[in-house]
Structures are given as structure tokens and as C-alpha cells.
Amino acid sequence: MRTEAVTLPGSPERPNEDWAAAALPAAGAGGTVVVLDGVTPPAGDDGCVHGVPWFTARLGGALTELSASRRDLTLSGILSLAIRRTADAHRNTCDLSHVRTPQATVAMARWDEATVEHLVLSDAALLLAAPDGAVRAVLDDRLDRVPEEVRRSLAATDRLRNAEGGFFTAAADPSVAARAVTGTSPRSAVRALAALSDGATRWVELFRAGDWTDLFAVLDKEGAYGLLRRVRVLEAADAAAGGVHRWKLHDDATAVYAEL
Image (cartoon, helix red, strand yellow):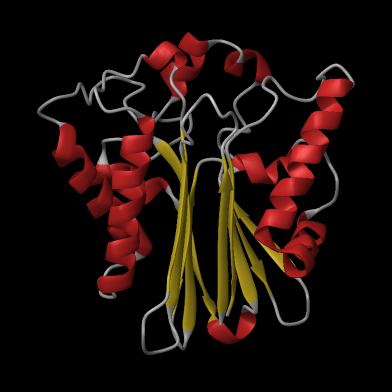
């Protein structure tokens, strides 16, 4: 069993708002991986005195601890409890009713001798590679279904944030955990897996450098850092060509890779 976690900030002038962890018990054949991608508010307008990096560290730490220690809970139950814990840590100092209260996308997986569980919320991604080489992407595409013209408007996007008919993120409401994309696979059907923030999935979703199977082949051969390095090269080439593919040069990018 082998795990690798790499995260790169989008800019040296800003703190990295992604968060990643991999936990392997000292005994047994289980483990867990967690990736969060913090949602950057415009001009810091989120009603919170702590900021997004504080939130992702708190939520990510709770998710990692609970997924390793509470085998009696499903991943959605763990996400719900972790959101509640994190909200309780700052509800007396911050406006948790603010539509842009600190929030994050989530990709996580947990496995034991028999099964592999997965959970994805918003535009993070989880990839499951089978022994025969087939790769399944677990995605939550609700944000992608929001029309491009709506996403260009902050006010219009906010009306769909954590709302019926819109898209969902992990913020201050524990009930959002029930909206996550979840599932379970036999352990024998999963050779390896990867959790990715959308800064890493740019390789497929923005730059079309290959499909999910191709991306997993990069992880197998070059590791998590190799994938992120490839993304940075594509971003630099795009900037040199006029930046037609993205609204900011680099995004925080995170990849966690685990061979089971």
C-alpha cells in the first residue's frame, strides 16, 4: 500500500486554500484520503474573521480523524458531523448565515479489507482504477449544469449556492452532506484511487490533455507531483498564448494518490 499527497499554491502571494490528507492505520488493511478545495470569496467578503484556509484545515482535520476513527458512520454521516464541528468552532464569532461563509468542495475515500467507500461534493473529483486498467471518475456535475451566463454573475451564482436547483458545497449546514455523490465498491475492484481538486483536474477538464484514464496513467508513472507539474506547464503555455482557457493563471492544485 502506498499513498502520496501533493498540493501547490496558485500564487506565492496568497495562502493555499486546498487541503489534503491521507491516513493509514498502524495495523490492518484500511485507509482514508481527503481533499478539500476552499471557495475563494470576492474581496474576502464571507462574514468570517478566520478565512478560508482556517476553515479547510478545521474541516479537513475533522474529516480525516472521523473517517479513520468512526467506522460506524458512513462518509456522508462523517461529513455532516465534521461540518457541525467546524461550524460550532466559529458560530459565536462569524456570520454563518452569509451565503459565502467559508466553504469547500470535497473528495474523499475510505477503504478496508472488503470495501472502498467514496464521497464527492461539488467540483472536486475522485478516480477509481480497476485491476484491468479501467478508470471510473466520480463527479458531482451540478455546478457544471449552471449556465455559463449565470456563472459570470456573482449575484446569480450566489442564489444557486447551496440551494435547490443549484449546487452544493460543505459550508455551515450539516444537512448538505446528504447531497453528496456517494457509493461503495468491492475492494477487489479497486487497484488504486486518486482525489483531486479542480486545480488538478484542469489537465482533463480545461486543457483537454487527455481523459481520466490518461490522467491516471500519469499518476501511475509520474506521481501526484508529476501531474501537477504538467498542469503548471499547460497553464504557462496558455498564458503565453493569451490566456484563452482560464480566468486566472494558476489555481491551487492538489492530488492525493493511493495504491491499495
